[in-house]
Image (tube, rainbow, N blue to C red; front, side, top):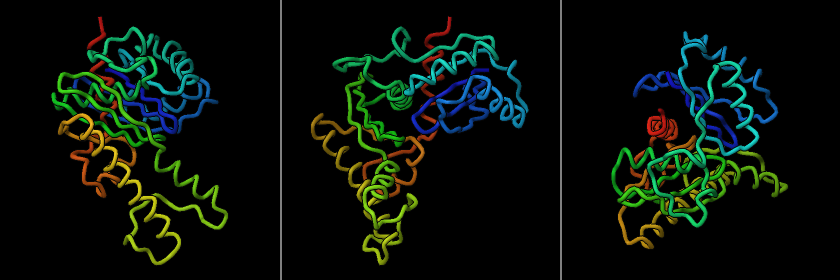
Length: 255
């Protein structure tokens, strides 16, 4: 079985694949202060609850946008799985040309998402990933990564509003009952939610105009389903897209 690990700024997702099937996946808070032993303890508990053992894992692949976490997870793999993991980065074969000024600047998660989405669609497409930041990535009909855009994530925007506006409370990210709200909490949620949906639709629209193309638009990430419900541009939500991409890239590199 294959252990896939996707390290984001807020959360780290662990998944176990057997062939094409995602058997289990877990989401933990990304904590750079944890040691390899602490992550091993957490994983051991999760594996045990799922009826799995460390010895079941034959290989590991990691995507990380948090550099300090990489060393921790590599040590974890060597110590507890007796494996050297594959790591998304220079030297790894993705099967996708990266047409960026400096390909090394592109986040590993963006490339992994692009590979998975193109494998599904085999057409031009835009991938919107709702994480700590929201990324928009454009892939050509020939499977080339062309670039994209990065915006502050919705949770970051929510926290910034609370921290910088003295009289405004902290609110949950949610779709309010109406756009013209009748209280402060719903007013904040209306501005945040509908404003963010407008941001997504606006960027996607401008990308399509600039590329003179009609790509498919897919979304992933923790808030993807919530935001997709309020947009006109998102065609499909693929919650496990990054894990799928790790599986695909692993297969292109093993052996």
